[in-house]
Each structure stands twice: as C-alpha cells, then as structure tokens.
Amino acid sequence: MKNLGIKVALFINYFVFAILLNSVGIVIKQAIDNYEVLETRASALEAFKDLPIAIVSFLVASFLPKIGYKKSMLFALLLVFFGCFYMYYGNSFASTKVLFLTIGIAFALIKVSVYSMIGLLTKSTKEHSSFMSIIEGFFMIGIASAYFIFPAFFDNKNPNAWLNVYLFLAGLIALSFFILLFSKINVKPEISNKTITQDFMGMIKLIISPLVIFFVLSAFLFVMVEQGIMTWLPTFNKKVLSLSDSLSVQMASILAISLAVGRLLAGMIVKRISWLVITTICIIISMIIVVAILPNIFELKTTEITSVTKITFAGFIFPIIGLFIAPIYPLINSVVLSALPKQLHSAMTGLIVIFSALGGTFGSRIIGYLFEHIGGHKAFYFMLIPMTILIISLIMLNKTIRKHEVIC
Image (cartoon, rainbow, N blue to C red; front, side, top):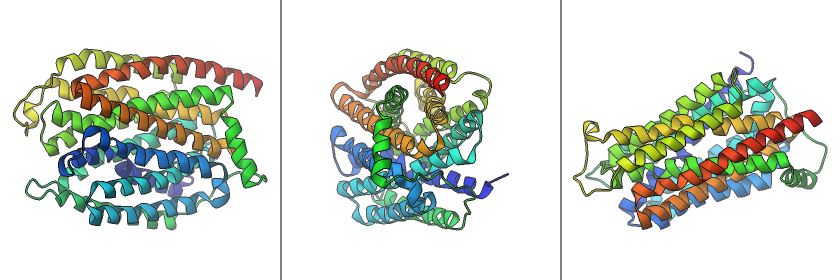
C-alpha cells in the first residue's frame, strides 16, 4: 500500500491522543471523588482542554504547512509527554488543569496535521470520506481503550494508585514519538507563496463563506452532543445507575465502542449512500433513543452495583446512541474539505478544530450545570435541542455544497 508507513504513524498518533483527550470524563469523576470538587467546577477541565485547542488552531493552522506536519506532531508528542509526568507528581485538581492544557495545545497540532495529510494521501472525494471515517473510527477505538486502561490502575485501598496510568501513557507517547520520527513522508503539502499574515487572513476570510458558516454550525452542534454525553457518561453511570468506580468507567466504553463501529461502518456505507441521508437518519434514531430510554432511568438511592449482571437494561442501551451519532462528524468534515482546494485544507482544518473545541466545551459545561442542578437522569434531555437544529443545519450545508460545486 502506498504511503503505508506514514498512514500507520497517523493512526498510532491519533490512537494515543484519543486516550489522552477523552480521558477528561474519567478525570472529572476522579476529581469529584478524590479532590472533592463540585460538578460545575470539575466541568472546567473540558475548557482547559478545548480552549487551547481552539486558540492554537486559530493561530497556527493557516501556516502549519510551512512549519511541517511531521515536526508539529513530534513537538505535540513531546509536550504531552511532560504533561503526563506533571500530572503524576502534581496529584491535585490544579495539575489536572495543566495536564489538559498541554493535551489541548498538542492535539491542535496533531489534528490539523492529520486532517491536512488525509487530503494529500487520498485522490477522490469517496476515498477521502472513507479514510476520514476509518481514522476517526480508529480514534474511537483509542477512546474505548481508555475506559479499560484507566480502571486497570484503580485501587480502592489506594486513592492515588490511578495516577500510575500516566507513567504508562508517557511510555506509549514515547513509543509513538519514535515511530513517527523514523516514518518517511512521501507526499508534500501545497505551500502558498503568501506571507504568514496573508495565510492567516485567508483563514479568517473562509469564515464568511456560506459553505463554512453552515459547516462550523454543524460541527459545533455535533460536538456539543457527542462530548456532552461522552464526558459525563462515567459520572452518570456512578451517580444515576449507582455503578462502582471501575464499572462506571468500563460501562462508558460501550459508547466509545459504538462510536468506533459506527464510524468504521460509515467509511464503507458512504460509498453507496448519500452522506446527508446517512446523517439525517442517524440523528433521528439518536433522538428516539433519548426519548425512549431516559424515562426508564431513575435516580434512586441504591446499593453500589459491582456486577455487570445487575445493571439495568437501559444502562446498556443508552450508550448505543454512539453507533448513530458516530458517522456525522467525519462525514461532514470530509465533504467540506473535499469541496475546497487542497491548499486550503490546513486553514479549514483549523476552523474545524476551533469550532469542535468550542462545541465540546459548551456541551460539557451545560451538562455539568444540569447534572448539579436538575439531576443526571434529566440532564441528557438537553441534547434533543442541538440535535434538532443540527438536522436543519446539515440540510442547508448540503444545498450550499451543491451550489459551490456548480460554481467550481
């Protein structure tokens, strides 16, 4: 397979950051338990992760091709390597903020580099959509792994034992660093002759395009839904379903596994069915799951559940929503990037990362607030609002893409 080495490197880097980036839900639960912070305050960790992603993407995305994608990814891995050690030795809520700050900065560089390189490694719109869905599916496998890696270090007798996971992750990051270091990139990005200032202003001008306006709205709404559910599912499992620490995290893996399967399937299905049809059907089914399942879950004072066999049926079904929301993000990213010239992919990816990060922050903060004030069993009903608006936004995005193709 052509460019196999660099493709493997991209998969591994994305896998590592999937574990780090989406451990925020697990760390929020640990912060509430170990550092005795309230839900609203703990939800600030999402902002410490997402806002650096947005800011760094905004500042560097337009001229990252001139810096070099490989150098950017190597620096990102090095930065988060030290972040893991700081978390291990810091062992405080303040150190969790520093950890996610480094993760956010690093992931901005990783995601812009990976998304931009997908355009260089593929030759057609369908190939782009397929590869995008597969790599995002692999990302979700990394997230699912986190739900088993972290509990493996939990110890009821030692509340600090879970910090050992960061030594393990530092080793995984070091491995990823050396694999990337010795990987050869046989494709070159299209580098503009413009100055850094001109490249930056070019990214700003993209925002006023109707194509980009409807896209960023769609990306914002989707990530609000996905991150809101993903971040708070471990806490939901513990506080609403009364699962034990380890079981509450492990059961959240059902969502990640569902997301992974959904994106891998989307990579195959999109070759035969319109992306708009797939995403619209998926959102409608997701809304049905929320309306049908949540009324059957009640916040009761029960004894702690430590066995999978005692978990309510709804506890297994609700995370399956991931199977249906999964295809949306990679498909809308792919159709928009495919509609733009390759020299704009880095700048456009910057916008993707920025508004995804903002959507994730808003989603997590809102759900955190609702958890604290109205209860976990009611908080997820909020997701019906962005889901409804998302359907309208995707329809408008499809119309805009068609007009853009006619003009081009």
